[in-house]
Image 1: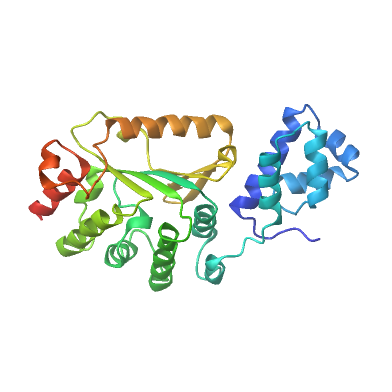
Image 2: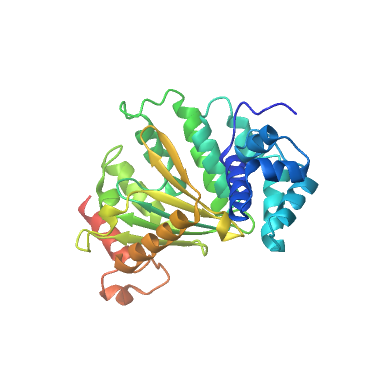
Length: 293
């Protein structure tokens, strides 16, 4: 089988995990390749996500490395055997690989934890708000309508069968940035409250008056599959995406997110009677911002 010309994050993630298995077992690439009956170059290509690994050989590698966790092994096999095709496949030509990776990670997650400081998270954006962002000259989007359709279709993950739980901490700054003008922001904030009605969505606002924890954290999405050890933290930069896969980083961002939830306001809860919002909470702050628009 030929080498892949484009490598998805799922494929890189699998290769990384197989390499970690081998290294944790104290095996060099040459030793492992010999015992698996393959060339060292082929094993290197598998570990770099450049080519696939047969299911039986993957099981053999797990046995060689002393891994007996059936749930974990089955998850690796599922990562290896999936075609990677989904609704996002139709966007391979107009979209760059980063957003495609994000869509596939979201589709394979049972939980998503995210922090945004200046923007409403993409999964919660209205079409008008997203279009205003994409039209910003600094971002340099050329295929605005394709990008917009892609973003709107991504949001279906929130309401699919067995959707992931989504917990977002949004800084107060994002509630006040008037992308597209006052009416666009008003519609966006009202939509944010409606999104919070979904049983699988939790939204907290991090106020200016809280500790500086959020300012030191940066924006991220922690995509957590059924086996959390196979999760990925995604950092989005102006020049692209960065993916963190190692256990230390996953643990670090879990702690960071717990800190964000601790210092943020109580989650938006539209089921409470108005008098129950006598204390400061996320809904009260959103409503205050709406009042000032």
